[in-house]
Image (cartoon, rainbow, N blue to C red):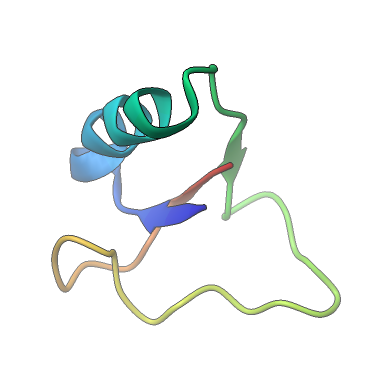
Length: 55
């Protein structure tokens, strides 16, 4: 699972596919809220706010 900004979305998808050999689901964090999970304060690759969850 990767929380990333728009700029790093393609990188996260590539890493996911390399690791799991399957296509990920992409969740728009601006449209979806989880009851028991809060997204990290910043992207895994930079200091921007994450916009997508790659699972």
